[in-house]
Image (cartoon, rainbow, N blue to C red; front, side, top):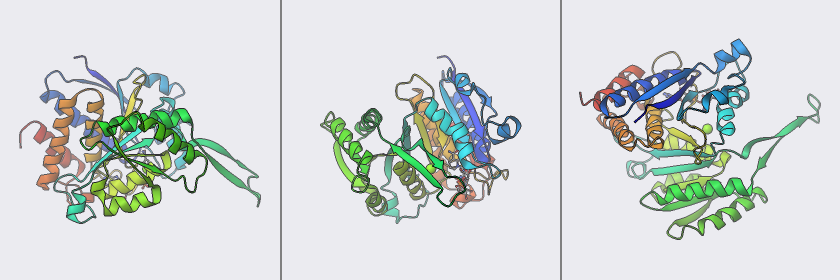
Length: 357
Ligand code: NAI
Ligand code: MG
């Protein structure tokens, strides 16, 4: 097997800290799995790059990423720069430029960890949230007028297209069908949002007709939050819009124990362009540079990337190494109630991969 060519963008804050930890783990896996190898290329794009060059990545950034098999990403966000500049300048520029229209976020309460729910409810969490990642409320369409005047206005227009809804619905149905329960919950808000969300319902309903074995139920987004808390075991795969899934997936991450664990894949299902894999957390100003960021989210992310690259055995091996470490509970970072730093958690996972401990 040729080496997988991975573009590595650590970005800002704790992004590079957890991504470098992830690269150590991937190297350890390559040493342990016959035939597995990686060719990593690091890009120093992000807020420091912006301070030097006036942009988050070079103009030909997407062209330079195009030939890679996957992108392994940290986080963006800097205390001195506006969040919309850092987000749109790098992360969203890649997601939208490469049409990574499916954002996939698995959530489970990993063994040994305590979430905020009662233990029997927490143990029932086993979800995949599929988020529409190219349009909807985050399409970037809108404008400002009458700047500085009392009649100043700002508008964000939610854009829902038949093609955009259809492709994400089909993707979500595929994910749901690949899981044992074959259960899809479609999240909507068509009672209050009378145009785009009604089209969403209509097109999703058309798509699910092609999946007769799938069990489908529908939830309004506000009611979905309480179902996630009160009846987590009734949920499996979730399909939601860009904004709705953004919020629901942070709730999911919290119920799963810590923002420091959650992982995301931004996928171009057509595979014409590289997909991007990132922990769900941001650059975490409050702990950056301290070496105590939880790297498990970036490891879970790496496992999603391996799965996408067809390295199923390595993906499973990494995930089970993470679970061995959480289950033992001896080497956990402060966000999980432990005292271990990033390096110690990384060493523990590598130790399990190598069979040393
Ligand atoms: P955040 O995720 O950076 O931090 C929220 C809280 O969770 C903080 O207390 C932080 O210390 C903690 N936390 C996050 N990841 C952790 C980890 N791996 N280990 C231990 N603790 C962890 O979100 P926040 O504070 O809202 O945003 C900070 C910056 O990150 C902003 O500029 C924001 O725009 C950006 N951001 C970027 C994202 C991305 O690049 N995909 C996603 C979310 C936020
Ligand atoms: Mg978010």
